[in-house]
Each structure stands twice: as structure tokens, then as C-alpha cells.
Image (cartoon, rainbow, N blue to C red):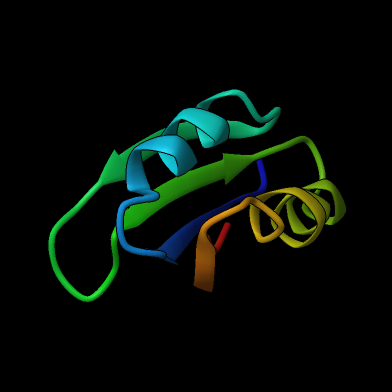
Length: 76
């Protein structure tokens, strides 16, 4: 099944609300709040790669408080 890991940088103090919003999005399988260069890691999974890309582009990246993302598409 097509999937990707998305690393997110969040505006200071918005991490908890982003994690909560991510957990409510269709196609988000796991969410981790982490320490380091990035603040959050989300695993996106759907039945087609096109849907994975749509979730990342039109839903995940549009969440309030998301400053930037880095997407890593999983090789099949």
C-alpha cells in the first residue's frame, strides 16, 4: 500500500493542536511528536500514491501552525 512519512516543523506552541488535527485526517496512520530538527512525524497511507500526495498537499500542509514539511515516500 502506498505510504509516506512526513516530517513537520510547527510554529512554537502549536504542536499539540497539529497532532490532534493530524489524528483526525483520513489517511494518517501514525503521528509522533519528536525532539530534534523536526517537531512531528506523520505516516500517511492510502490505496493509491495519488491519494497519498493529495492528503499531503491539500490537507496536511494546510493545517494551521505547520511551517514546513519534508516528505519521504516509501519505496515498494
